[in-house]
Image (cartoon, rainbow, N blue to C red; front, side):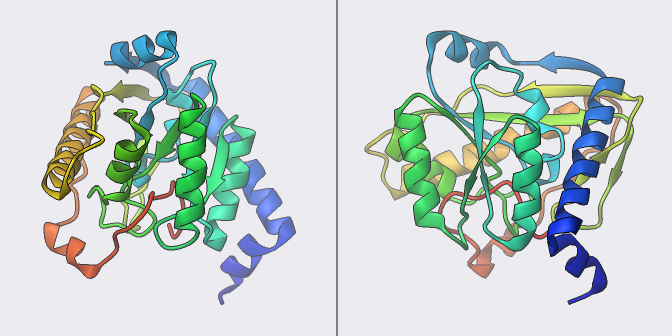
Length: 250
């Protein structure tokens, strides 16, 4: 294990990283000129007390929680991978409640907890391409959760005019201060309780297409170059399963 990973996984290192991340994220948020696009459906569900699942790409994790801006807290599924612990601590500082588990670690426990929260009227956020991709390709876990819970999936993304794009698998967007930004919401996607395998695959592809189109549109709104999803062939490596988390393996 390299020096950087040893530091990030030590208690002191985690504390420092979480503090720096929260401070920098807050700085970016308050110094960016924001607008919101397409939130009408989400607001209607908030007013009606209708729970839903929010889907956002792993590469748009940095400011996704700031786009929530609702009185009701959101619970975010975060990997049990050691790197996910840093993200879990950071999200708590931002008012987000982490649910630990993923398609690779703790998936059954995360699914049960997610169902419990949704049945109680809570809100769940998932990055359906995490924790290891393929980038911007929906894994089936989120569709299964929508089918079992009976609640819709609402796409969410953000884009900024000033950014750095990491060379990580997810092309993680590092937003920079003093730019323009947009939080973009998509229409809800419903998955029938009696959906068969073909219907669930159709819903998966529909969500993928909608979230990719929404993300590209948001990038264009702020004059940023859209980030392309990974090729479909990357999906064949077997990285599919339960609810996908919002963090791990940058």
